[in-house]
Amino acid sequence: MAVARHLPYGRHQAGDRHSSSSTKPGTSSSAFAYRRNEERIAAEAALDGIYVLRTSLAQDTLEKGGVVLSYKALANVERFFRGCNTELEVGPIRHRRPDRVAAHVFLRMLSYYVAWHMKQRLAPLLFADDDRRAAAARRAGPVAAATRSEGALRKAARKRAESGEPLHCFTSLLEDLATVALNTVVPTEPSVPSFRMITNPTPLQARAFDLLGVSHSRGYL
Image (tube, rainbow, N blue to C red; front, side):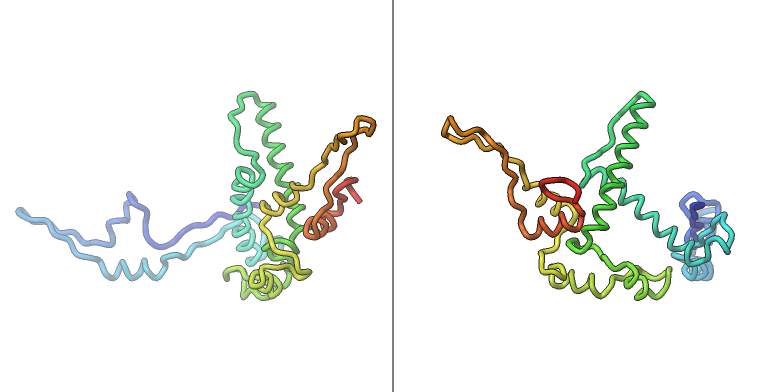
């Protein structure tokens, strides 16, 4: 998909050759004066905040609403970089060799790919909206601000999932799941051999593992 770029209207940037059009200077042999160009200021205010999206794709390939949604979806790229540096802890490293740079970028993309799929499956336990179709149906249009589904609003108000578990953000849920541990038990009686024991998951952890389709003790179900 071609990336749409916006062309802003409204106030001119500093240093623009037209930036002085909002004032009307006047000079004399002994003084300098200026006054506001109210007509020009009003014309610019009428367009302030309006921008145009332009794409190289034909309208039958990507209609107008799709262009707007694609442009707004660029926020996901910003979330990707922020998520790599925070919740995934895969921050930038100063590599010099091309193969190491490529390997680091691959690991960042792979970690984000895995995290994205985990978030989709764990959505019922997260504050995230897990009914995107209902949310899209409540939205007035692609230009309007994004809305949340009724189910997501109920979750946010109750701070609990539909099944009763407390809601989490992705990071706090991972921290909760990290408490499941494989312990090596060494009995005090020398004749009894040591053995390993996995901690029993809490109801929240069991629900999370069920949504992910994995077993806390045996891997994939």
